Length: 326
Image (cartoon, rainbow, N blue to C red; front, top):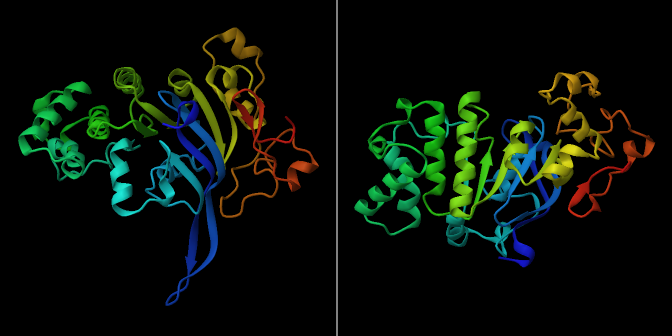
């Protein structure tokens, strides 16, 4: 653990995917700037919510942190070790400490493997447990996520979406991680099931002392689960602050627009509040706008926004903003 309880340090993280053209000789003709120079910390035991529109780079950020994609540039430091420098066995030795719950419970579970084999696979790779010990551990993990241990003999297609996501949670917990990236774990589920999965994640965090990076586009759900919230747009972080502060006094125009779209269950407040309607579509990450990437949709943009990239600056304790006007 590094200073001030920081478990994860991300600095100037960039991931650009090359666009290749050519028949015999492939050459890059451009780059998709999925993640474009972001910096933040995650503290031990907290939940950091990462929100933004589809295509803003949230899931890519999670995968680059875990080194499922190698970063183009920048650094990722986890528990004092720089992950982007690790390879082979050194990186594999870090895998048990950081796991991921994937977005689609239908696509992330191998349909040819039983539930017992799916949950037991990390134990087979990262531990020296016997077959009997693994079977016992799988049964305990199924109980932990609210499923019957008998289900270990069944296949994924026999379960509902909510049950499959619980199996995904059990698989992530198998090797006792310290840090879990939840990549939109509820977006593919029915509304009635979403709350159950979120409550399960909160209970597990209290019981096991886990740290989460919770990626989502549902702002009301993030408000429920997150301690701090980071807002992402076109590969860049727009704002980062405590959950209460970002919902009550957002500073960035993009954050204000996002929050204005969230319905409030009070008809009087809903009628009087001001809605911010953004013009146009999200630009392509292949050719993002110059200056501030949000300037062509921002209702407050001035000339400097079009030409100069704003600094990622701290405006108060723990409140960071990427904007010239703040």
